[in-house]
Image 1 (cartoon, helix red, strand yellow):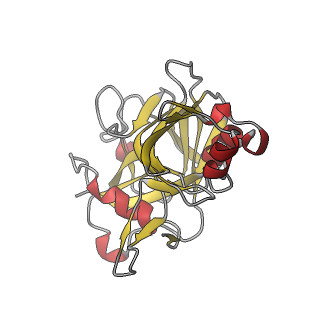
Image 2 (tube, rainbow, N blue to C red):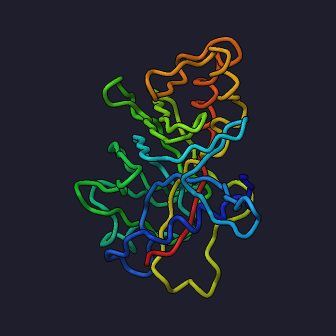
Length: 264
């Protein structure tokens, strides 16, 4: 049975595997990840485990992410007034511009180039990791890169079991809308004892609610969802599941969170 942890517990844990490939202690490695707050509990309640790549439908089916890719551009982060760009000019990527605070207007970091992140894809520009000042950021403002059916803005492939047989959910969407990642619930800041450790910071997509309102089994039983072999595509939805694809897209677009984690 699934259980929900306090928000961010899984997201923080999931960042601990980030590569510590360089970068001074006064910087964050910038990245984007995805995850969930799902905890899997053994049938006999003998134990439990975090399942950061698993989300659950309304009827209790478990969907384990196999691959997930998303594309963003025009990343912008406001800087605290005390931060001066010149103090980080040797660290910032050449593709990232930095503006100091002027006349009450906050300073900002801006990365205009599109990036593709997700399963097995860490954020990089020109093949290089991106480092930013290790300061407080309330949000990351960005936008989706307009996609095509062959190369969508967001693409997901997840495995699930239905009536004892393995199946695959395939889902994608195209968008050019703004996307905001901001702190939700409990702060993900690192404890003070880790202040001298290499750290990562960035945006996270929360997959928890994508199918939380969709009865997949019920719609498959009534024909409101159909299978193409063993592949489920929400776009086939009608009747009770007519809005399944739209609801999943909106859930993802509204799920932007922030994470902070150690680079091991």
